[in-house]
Length: 102
Image (cartoon, rainbow, N blue to C red; front, side, top):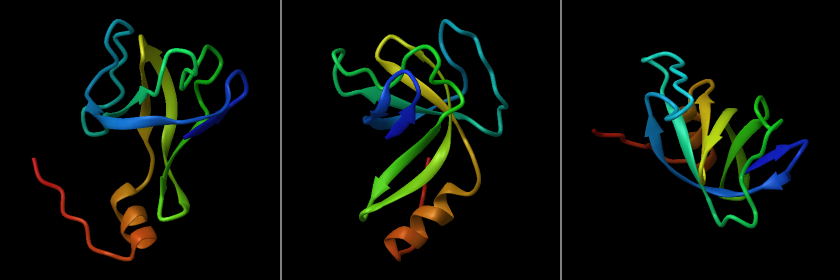
């Protein structure tokens, strides 16, 4: 979810990570990939012009975990840069140990 000036509070589906934003050509840092959010539908976009810089959060177990900063959108996908240790934040919110594999 995200609250931005142009769009207000919006929700989308976190669908993965990317090393760049297509068509925009932004490459943040190879060590810090972009999170990718898919819009729920075109009538309620996750982001619009002017939303860059707003905080993107993940709702889990009744809590909003800060994930990163919105950077831009292409089509029905929005991209954000990760901030902080997201894995640790999610573990604390869920009170469990997470294991990530590639």
